[in-house]
Length: 136
Image 1 (cartoon, one colour):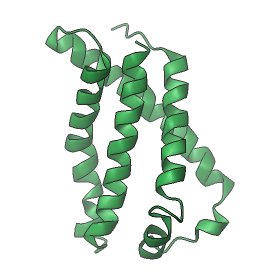
Image 2: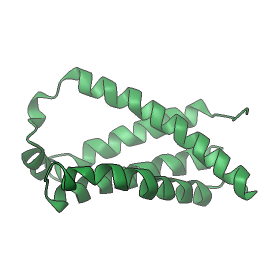
Image 3: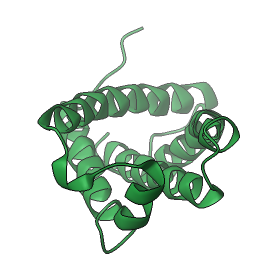
Image 4: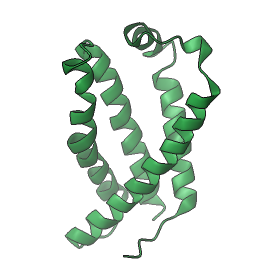
């Protein structure tokens, strides 16, 4: 199946993901609390962490673009910002929520840790979907 991809939208979605993450996990928002619970030293983040986040951000935006296209085709609707956001929400609920729940159930992290991470992914996916839907 030939799925059209707007690579400029993908790039913008990746940038939005990085900006949201930088703000979300900054010390003045959730960063201090999150780093304490996660036992992560935010002052010494290796470069490889940023590189991997960029690479996986591209993968996520690219696949999200496919989800948005296929969902619109399946329902016979036009791709809009609203339909893209709806697709992102259902992807978050069906995939991210169950996967990230392991931090609470198996890693015995507090619920606030889960809400910080799950909230970040919800906001980030919605922003990426809005960009992809707008530039379709």
